[in-house]
Amino acid sequence: MAEIRLEGVWKVFGRVVAVRDVTLTIEDGEFLVLLGPSGCGKTTTLRCIAGLERVDAGRIFIGDRDVTDLPPGKRGIGMVFQSYAVFPHMTVFDNIAFGLKMKRVPRAEIRRRVQNVAELLHIEELLGRYPAQLSGGQRQRVAVARAIVLEPEVLLMDEPLSNLDALIRLQVRAELKRLHRQIGSTTVYVTHDQVEALSLGDRIAVMKDGEIVQVDDPTTVYEEPANVFVGGFIGNPPMNFLPGELLAPRKDGFLVLKVAGRELPLPERLTPKLQGYVGKPVLIGIRAEHIQVLTQPEEGALPATVLVVEPLGSHKLLTVETGGETLKVLADPDLEVEPNASIWLHLEPSKLRFMDRETERAIPL
Image (cartoon, rainbow, N blue to C red):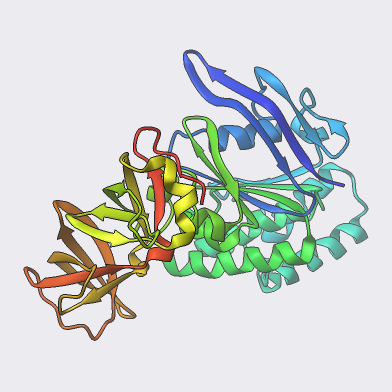
């Protein structure tokens, strides 16, 4: 069993708290992504799991073993770094086999395992080449192969695709997802790229300032962010936020949301959950794809002015202004609209997310 548990882990560099009281359980065989901006503590957390950084407080367990004070070589892990870190003077075969040779694995077993992992990653025809003869994507596959050939219980990856161009990154990302299904190692993957996180992770742990602010499956993190930071970090474009106010229920029992100078009735099911926020300022979060663009005024729609039009093939990305606020909106590619045009925005009521404006935390619905 390769469950990973972090219990109250701290890591401090001088006056900088890199990891702050992180408690997290990663299930056996799970693919967990540590996601966040530069400096949030995600790589330091990974290095603590690997044993490359000694924790200042807390404990780390892999399976039933307390590995907090064990060196990396005794933790049963494989690691893939941001830099390929392949040996330039060795062939691909020797690069992959290096760890097995250090463990004095018999030659026949080395050949069998290297061949198997090379076939798994589609690099079997490259085994006789040197790294200088490989593309960036091929070198990254070699680095992954070198880690998994050791058959580790835990596979740790630190931004392994960040040095690749967009097309190769897309290809290798798909390979990693397929690979994880086949080998089943518990995997912790660090990235700042939220597209990678959404596409790869069974769960995503979003970090900020050394703390984990939300851990959940990709759909929940995307649709129901725990706070304004998560909503603004996840998604391309990120979630829109508008200041609003909740007004007392009407005679028909519907709460009213006042936003951008308009009053919008909300579904009746929200009344008991938002009743405590009546008369208080809130933030309204909504994704770009949940805003419908109208070319004619409609009751409840927000008037807006188009600022920028970006044709992106399958859709147009509009930057618009409404009520003094700037929003990103996805529109049909056939929509004929130009900068400075007047449009109207229909916000899908069921897709609205409400945040406490003071704490910036989500209001549970």
